[in-house]
Amino acid sequence: MWEYTTLQLVVGGFEDGATADNYTLILNQYGVDGWELVSTEKYLSPLAGGDVLILFFKRLMQPA
Image (tube, rainbow, N blue to C red; front, side, top):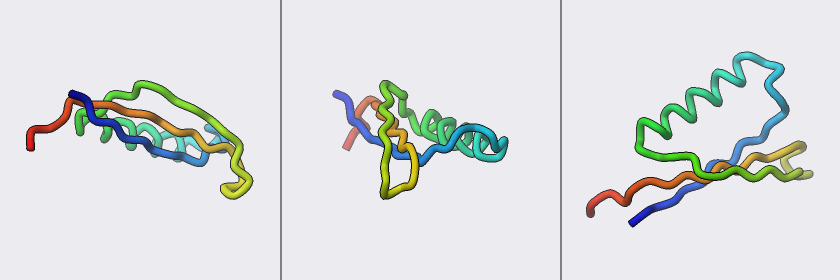
């Protein structure tokens, strides 16, 4: 059985190397925790002031 989670990131491009490195650290930590990225969706959010990227992850459900 699978469990799912999402992560939302406000993105403005990768013009800043530190921002790209931060995304890499976040994604690597999700991988260490057993999450697999399965899909993405991007939308324009006036509230966030830019594009929001939603990352969808799945992993095998942990035993209770």
